[in-house]
Length: 75
Image (cartoon, rainbow, N blue to C red; front, side, top):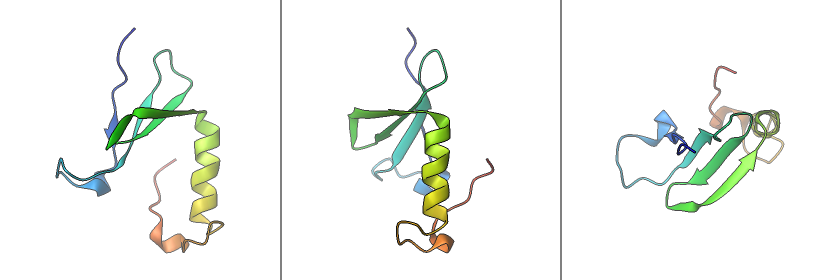
């Protein structure tokens, strides 16, 4: 089985010492993997629709963060 190809946000910059959330597609597809770069052994699995709903709620300010502070991606 192949290893996931982890990607980080372009907002994290190029500094290798910056901690950030990374995302990958699980081998076989259909599931997304999330991890914190400074704790790469702790991996969260989720469905793309679930992550999409979480990001939409964050953008709307549901968690108390102003929507202007949450980056919008092209879904």
